[in-house]
Length: 153
Image (cartoon, rainbow, N blue to C red; front, side, top):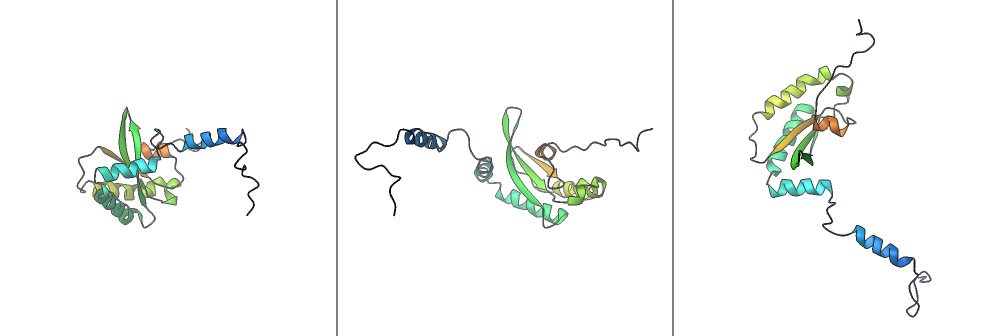
């Protein structure tokens, strides 16, 4: 074992090593306000006992959209309040190309979702039709018809 990179017990540590150690310690501070968003969402789900609702939502998503569909909880800020948002990723690659073919399945999802018992905790549910759609589309799903040159009169 080569310990040449370590200072000897009698010699002082290199002056450049101390700032790096302090910087490393600072980044590892627990509770510094910057928490992992996935951990925050998982803690919220556990604290409010929403695991069964998450499971039911995931089962509903996979039965309507297929086995590739997933449901992931996210903590989002709505106004000044933190809200839980369940993002249903339908994982339908064709939805990005032909949304009108995807729309009946999305409507079937919302119809079945209406019959699920809801928890008494404020939350949102958003559908992301295809992987690769940006986060803002998943959190505020709305669709706009943009005219092409063939549509112009």
